[in-house]
Length: 111
Length: 113
Image (cartoon, rainbow over all chains, first blue to last red; front, side):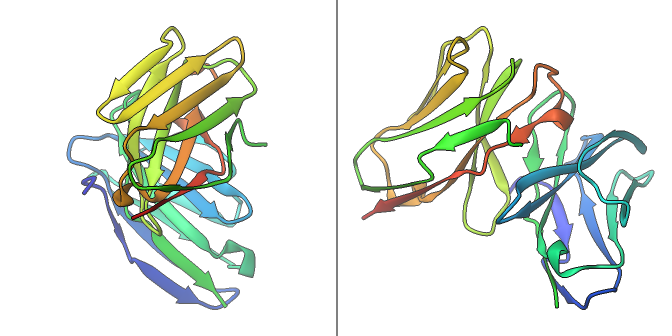
């Protein structure tokens, strides 16, 4: 158990819908990272937050947004969902520049 | 494009044998990391090797790094069925920043009992 929690574990929704994925980092970790893992693209970095502020952006679509709250949990919002957004979404936390600790992931299926 | 690319894509061995997995990367790095992922689960960090290190050990794991060839290898000795998983290398693009970690597509290791 990495200490990083993610909810929900599974999510099934329809195209055009909006979903919110939630992540709680390890106790004491100020940084949260979001990754998307799909069969064709592999593991892609989406965005990083550090102590509530956006720190780095990767291959995140404009339809996606994230935030980190004062209690350090983070949410990833995915809107206008398309079939191609079906993937595993991972959250990871760290005390930069330390090691990444990954959560168990949320499996999103867009039908 | 992926910074780290693992080779082979899939590996099947018998329990007790050694497993060797390779990773090649394109640009200079500060460090290179190896992760394991059990099916459908989150990634677990295995080992980090810095650019000024050539070899590192952790239990049954041995990682080597050759910066002149831009390659790394992960050796798992005396493999067990529980080692069955996907293995990824990740490089930091010489930034030292986790946000710049790029992962390869992974190697699927199957260890037959």
